[in-house]
Image (cartoon, rainbow, N blue to C red):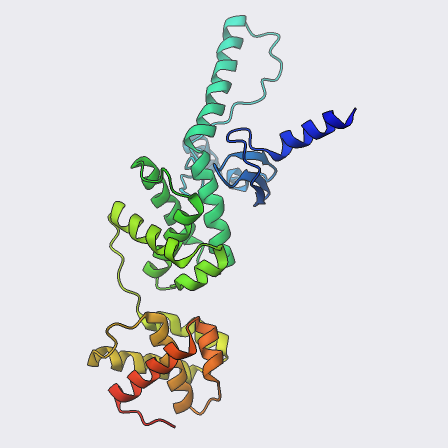
Length: 304
């Protein structure tokens, strides 16, 4: 084999056959195109298909209903894969032609209708796991992304940006919020682009996204800072008191959480620097100082 043939083979492996992009990466054991979502190579077995039956009733149920319906599979578990054909010598030419046409159309269906959804599922799974979020978000996020596909509102937008925005929305909704700066750092997507896609999806999918409660940030950031349960409880009390007095208007939930945690640590006698609290929560020291001043003045806490 000469050098030109070797180079040609390499190019065929490293380029997406659909869009010609060389931006490929391995995700969950599959080689995928980052531009269009085409799956070039699949290596992982489908574990969800391994249903076990221990009784006759269970066996009959599986035979009758098939695999469970789930939005965390691109086709919700409805697809049927046609085999490689086996021994086709005993099949009539008419049946053989029908079989190969069915296989051809199935490949087209997978590539055209489900390519983007499969890529979105992999991105969502990766992001949810890397940010230690509940796996239930994957199922709900998949349902919302499929809804977006059906409404034809994803055209012209990057899949990674839409997925990140959905994770941001769902984490807020489930009471385990992540800040935009955290998701931005994890994905490499700017907070500006993340915010644009978040607002776009909320509007187009008619999602009622409630404001983030700063108290939802307290357990996670408190644990990261090594605070006691008493300090965590005090921080939540400070926020509740500030909410009742209406002194938090115009301040972001993460900055409120940072200020409440630092103030609570002072009141409970736990030593921590403003810098470490600011870095853990992801706010600037200036923002933290302004938040502290606001809480002390509004709640009559003297500065120590």
